Image (cartoon, rainbow, N blue to C red; front, side, top):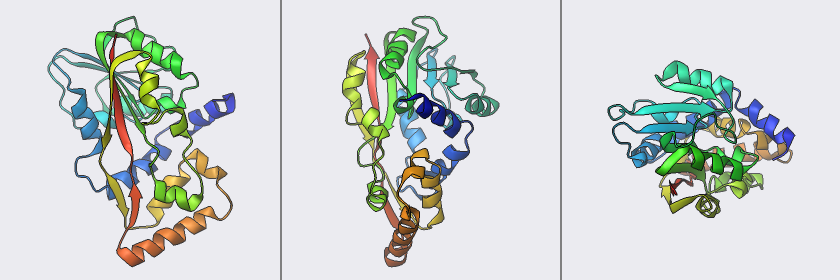
Length: 251
């Protein structure tokens, strides 16, 4: 990731406005009633008294409406001070704006660490994973969520593009990267799709992504026409979702 790319990430996530457009599409039109945040939270299997760190918390959606075990302590962090401010205003957790590549915590400070759809933004993935291992206690649990190669494939077919971030860290190539630092690495997908019954939320999702600015001229119009036609023909525009979690255990 270049310096300009890093600046782009900071601009993209200076607050939750772009993030919110993407969440809205999933919230309104996902078909699986087992919501993504609930599915991820359940896999953490938090125990009483555990110390938890989320890196790349965004506005903190993972924790909304969740009941924590007694004496569990959560710290949320993000590169974006704006995101940290939003999350900390809504959640009763300690919060810090920090870079995943240089965490301000002592060795073995946490029992659980969550990196939620953020590792593909990190310039030095190995540096971040080494930091995650350092701040986890031996035997501590690591959870990294990301997308796979099939994410939004119907949209990408119209745009004639791919989401290159999965080349950096996706469900397919993520496990061996994690295995360099953690044992017992597994990967599990969340089974879900989108059935969009309106055109504009699909376009708003794509406009919220920095990569959408680089698509060919006329692509947005073509996508709108494709979505509208499928809605008229079958009642909704089908979008494949391909998200999941990669887990590991600190050596």
